[in-house]
Amino acid sequence: MHPVALAGTAAGRLAHHAVSGVVGALIVKGAAKHLPGAKPAVRKAVVGSVAGGIVAGRWLAAAAEEVRLKAGDVLAEARTSLGEEVPPPSAVATEGPEPDHGHEH
Image 1 (spheres, rainbow, N blue to C red):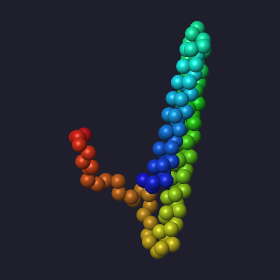
Image 2 (cartoon, helix red, strand yellow):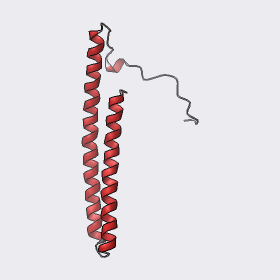
Image 3 (cartoon, one colour):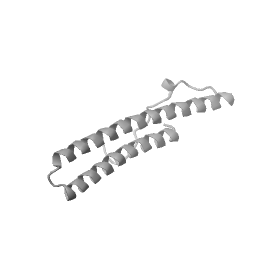
Image 4 (cartoon, one colour):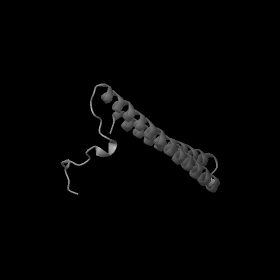
């Protein structure tokens, strides 16, 4: 996977978790201190915040995928300009030796 795609994907996931977690925590802490009887409203607000974070995460994931595809197009065009034959995306080998990372599957 291209480094730009990895960065975009990681940024999308990080933003999703950051927004959801920070907003939810702030709402819960603030309501617990100032309005002890407001738990149902707080829960509704937290659920809404998390739902918004999910939507934002999906949007960021779609944007990261678009960046990945555009980066692949630019890479293919650059290889073509150098006279190299560019394999179609489905022809890229995904199999290989299994990485040894300390446990069995």
